[in-house]
Image (cartoon, rainbow, N blue to C red):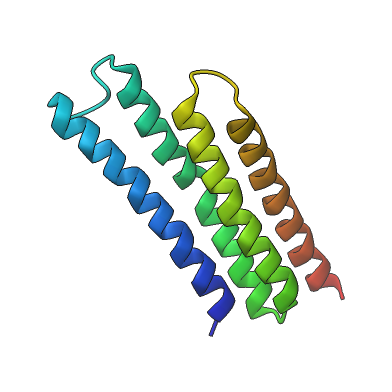
Amino acid sequence: MLPITSLYASLLALIIIFLAYKVVVFRKTKKVGLGDNGDFDGLQAIRVHANAFEYVPMMIILMGLYEANGGSQLILNIIGVLAVVARLMHAFGLTKSKGISFGRFYGTALTWLITVFLAGLNIYTYFI
């Protein structure tokens, strides 16, 4: 069982579903079946949702592997909280700005740091 990973995977899944909902609202409101129809708000909603899908699954997989291999519960909880914060920061930052923003930059940076840290933890765990 992976209770810690399950908790944070579930929280991240709720974020992804909320972002998907925003895409559906755009499509329904603007009557767009596929793509963004040249609408910047639509493009923005689609990219925020897609970006979460580009990064969240790998973080969850790496968390699950670390937990399955007996990783520290404290580290997993810290990583989980930071992952949720990072994805919220990124989503808010990209939604509220057309360019680089605090949330977008630091949300992305934190997501990358978490992923690299988890990869390193898993590699380290293999060798010890």
